[in-house]
Image 1 (cartoon, helix red, strand yellow):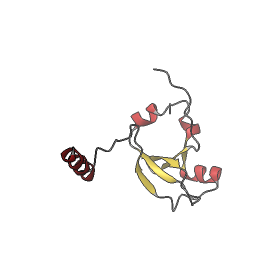
Image 2 (image 1 turned 90 degrees about the vertical axis):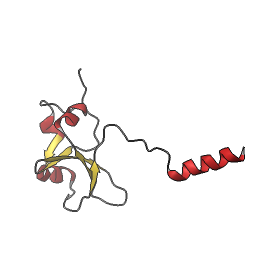
Image 3 (image 1 turned 60 degrees about the vertical axis):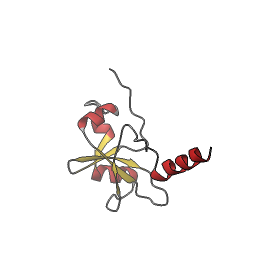
Length: 103
């Protein structure tokens, strides 16, 4: 399967051996960092050997390009390609049961 160039607002950043997708955070200059869990995830995001050097930068290069220090950037968890859908909460189930018994 052929993929096009990823649409990124910022390049990804490599800190040590981990790769993160910066996500702009409200009210702060530093982005929140989402951890890319595997090389397969990079491929699914459109990162290839041809564009890796342009789209995944080491921390120093990233900070110079964007003028932002990542020293205080929070890691906001793992980047998930498929969002998790929350099931009904216990209170939702109780509300449904109560309305069913009223009918």
